[in-house]
Length: 145
Length: 110
Image (cartoon, rainbow over all chains, first blue to last red; front, top):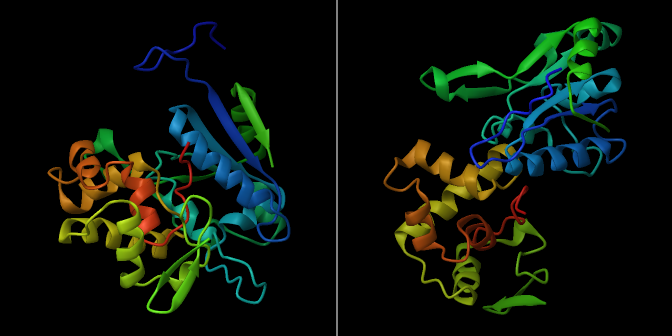
């Protein structure tokens, strides 16, 4: 890693933050709390990414229905992440495989690339365990939920 | 703490955001706006309706930067800018417009 940190427009320091989500969405408050912190972090112009592994992959499964649980279904909020300029959602391939899921079971989460004529691009990237491990090692800050 | 109109009582928190968003109505929006010293015009309603649609779709209220960007996308740059939005809602477009729209305080509003 470089010793020189990239300054942003206001002369501050941009750090790489990764939010690591490991728990299923509705049994505990971890997922919704993580999402809240992610949305707040967007206000600070940092390099933010999210990782979904273990049961965390269930957080972005499509067509969630919480009506039987008596709690709010907050999953549509992941689709707003692009508006908040959070465009990197890494999903571990092995975690999907182990749970009988594929990329087709995940929500379509898109962002508009301002540098490419606002073309809509997918935010979700399915990566292997090795690659995710490498991405984690490149972060300045890892926050686990 | 509560808003009262036409014999109806709607609870709100210490900042004036209603606690049960299902109790919102256009009449209530006018009452909340009055509390905020805002006279609702078609331009105000345009933003409030936009916020309600946004919340319906994403289940969150956008932060001010996101709101202005989204307005710009759907209504053009004459409206999607700080000056226009702060002209409508002087104490913060996201905060005030969300309050009038009956939504929670915007997420990521620091």
